[in-house]
Length: 137
View (tube, rainbow, N blue to C red):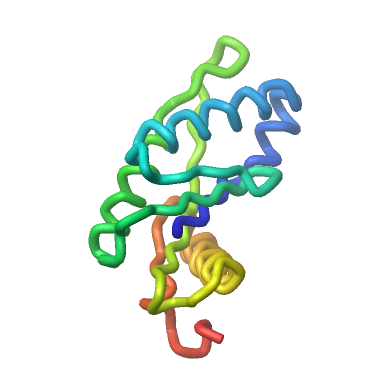
């Protein structure tokens, strides 16, 4: 599972307006979907948070590679209100069954990993299994 959060999305809404923010969210969703396989599922949780369920992917290294591709696609420039705009994102990863056996646990752990990505400079990917032990509770 990937948990993606746009970095400083509020700034887009505050400077370009909510319509531009909505356009950006639509384009982010399209880019994430186009980067993943047809068997994968992408959903917007709310605000600027998305989850992607990667089916038939249990290898953390493979999932990390996919997440880096998603990050690269999301961080390409956008045309918002006739101007090029660049955003970044932070992605957390949890892997079934190592990081959880149910949807809620996997989401919570991927969210925790995403917050570590944000706290460590943003615009990066973090695996839950690689977080310090005190973070994994």
